Length: 425
Image (cartoon, rainbow, N blue to C red; front, side, top):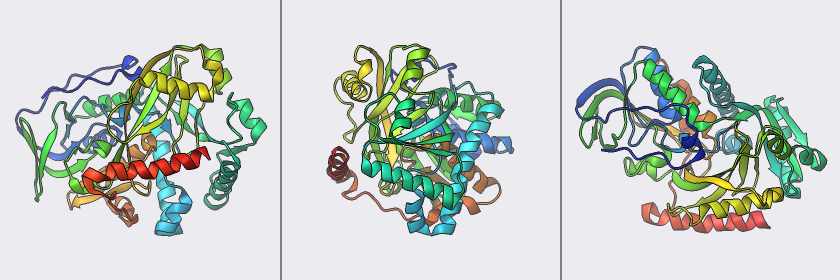
């Protein structure tokens, strides 16, 4: 099976290394088989290989082909759902454990970059931006909750004047800046992890889509031309399950989101737009953006539920970018691309097991850079030592998207139309 090429993105054009891995064409055995070569899968494979496990990693396309290689690149504290929501779901004590694990994921992301010397353009700082009085109040509440209840002291609140000093756009009325969060080149980060996993002895196969999982004390994973027998399996497919597990697929929705990269603007122009940080508004359907190491604006947003990329994507993304930054009206768009983010009904992470020896982690809902890494670590930890921290996530209740596989997308379109109207109002 031939792996698809990477999408024509700025990330693919600026990738700093490339790999050629074989397709699986025989029957092999492993202690652990990992399905998916995004951040989640590669981190879990790397951690287990470093502890002496024989690990096989199967990727349907090229390594880092999915969200890990084409996302907005923001590494953000916490989870996609707010801590107050987690408290309502699982109680304050469990919510505190989840918070600590999320911060660990962010810290370990930075540490991995140092430990494996990954060249991925890490920059500190992330701003969440308000656009109306309701947003201003929400950011103030968020700030006080995290500082007072969780002792998180990396945050700074910006009023109208302060946010205009930091983000040169007429749209924003307030901001919540986190010095602990940051941003990076997601494909180069993922490829750096792949290089580390390869060096640690992980057997990696591209163009090797898993077509069937046969459960048992020893799990059999079949591909088009081969199979793996493994004691443990890690499912790290997220929005790219494509029929592999109907149960998991019913609880995560692949939502298309899109990014444009401008022509190079120069360091001074980028700094005038935003002071080195990443940023996003707090609308339900949000815009997010940052400047690249070669001084382009990477501007993301817009969503699609049909699976089809919008026509004339460059023009659509350019129009929204100019809405936020009118001073960029004369700037050209060099790249525009999209990919799927996997969201859950409640925006909380969905971790668990399909069987005692089959682990999964999905539904990062836009917080994948840091959360995917800690998910991979927790699954490796569950296999190698203790599952206590991983199994904690099974306390979070998850429901299937209504309508089944055929009707869940139109049902979500209707629901999201409501939230878009709410954003505009």
